[in-house]
Image (tube, rainbow, N blue to C red; front, side, top):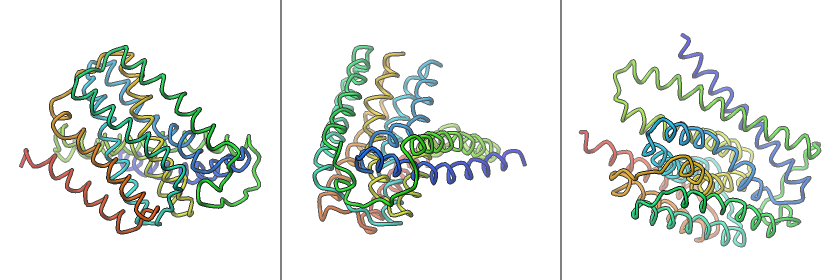
Length: 313
């Protein structure tokens, strides 16, 4: 009963936190005079990546740096194929051309950079410092190009909530706390059930931990899609994936060197890169993500999971 209470509480916090987070983010964007896309890329995207940061740091400090790297790569795959796929199927998203030419290029660049680092097995303290230094540089670039642009750059006109800046930022912070805590409760409860059912640690790690640390992105993106705030949902995924590589791996590599597991170099890093390229292709063809493209992303994630399980069959 206690386990199911964890799961139920986690779901309530995820959905409630996601709703509060999107409301606060839109209000903050209006008051700051920036696009909802920028808020999604930075405040929401970075905030919902906190579970990945905690999981990766914990793994590195406990002497399992391979798990830290796998968590980031796996989360980036799930963010694009699973979460953005679900969000696009719920509500097709308009992609703002000017902003995506910037952020899509950054996503491809960091994905290529991560691929090179994985193949070269080059996650040293110096590498971590270099990655981390790129976070404020990217944030400043987004702010510089979006500040004062308002909602026009996002391709959407947000509602005008009766909230001030402080209230909007406070709601955003409360929403982030809710989805992060909810994700932790849900993963803990689901892991207990999986172990009781006799599932292996490998299967639990693949299906629950990798996806579990992406639950805040899922909750936020689904709520944003249902509220027709596609820029928040889209920016959340782009911002999370960029921050996962630059911020989370940057901090983790500073704490402990990250040897690259052979499995990641053989398959997962290529799937991550292919997912980023597929997202870019879908975004620039018609400058929208359709339900059909969302279904294609979900189908690709199903194939990826099948490839993971195939050796054990």
